[in-house]
Length: 274
Image (tube, rainbow, N blue to C red; front, side, top):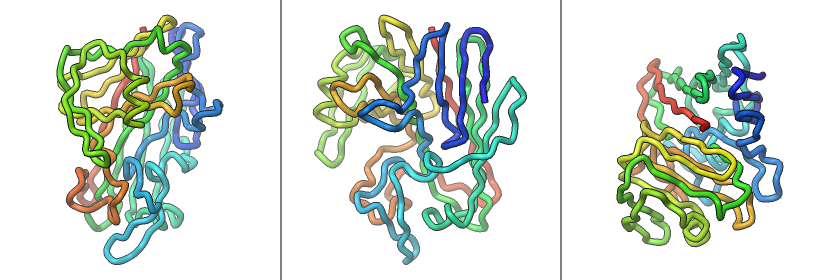
C-alpha cells in the first residue's frame, strides 16, 4: 500500500499497521528496522506501554502472558480502505488477542497525506460489556546518520521533568534546543519527559527536519538502542512506562483510559517533513 503526493511517499504494511518506509523529496527518513540494533520501525503501543519484567500479569484472579508494548505491533491488520487518498487498517479482538488481553475491541488506524505531513489517526472501540482499561503510545523511529549534526528543538523554551522511577530520578531539565541526547540516553536508557508545554518536537539534521506532533499526549519518550545506532525514536505517550514491576498493568494506580462499553476513543498525531 502506497500513498504518494509528490512530496511524500509513504509505504505501509499490514504487520502492526506500520509505516514501512517514508521518503521526503526522495530521501529516506524513516528507520526500516533492518539494522543490527533494533528490529522495530514504528510500532503502536496498545494496550500497554512497555511491559512487566515477568512478561505476565494477573487480572481479576487470572494470569495472562504479555509482550513488550502490547498487541498491535505483533498483529497482522486487515486493510479495509485503500483508495489512493487514505489507507485504513483494522484489528478486531480474536481468540488469540483474548489470551493476552481479555477484552473485545476494534482498532483502526488511518493514514492520509497533507502536503508535507503524514496524518495518522486511531479509533479504539470497546466491543465488550465491561469497562476496558488501556493506555496508548507511539514509537516512530527516524534515521540520523550523524548525531553531531542533530539537535532536538522544542516548540517552547521550557523546563520539563525527566523521570525514571526505577532509578528514583525525577528532575527538571532545561529544554529548548536539546543536544545532549546521546549522553542522557546512555545514562537513562529511555529519556521520559513530562510537564511539557510544547505541542511538537522538531528534529533537525543536516539532511532533513522532521516535526512530531505531541499535542494530545502527556509524556514524551526519546530512545535509541545503542550509541552507534543510526536512528532516534520520538515517542508521544499517554502515560509513563512505569509498569516494570507491576503484577497488573491495568491497576487503578496507573494512568489509564477507561473506555465504557460500545464507546470509541479517538486520538491522532502528525509527522511533518521540512
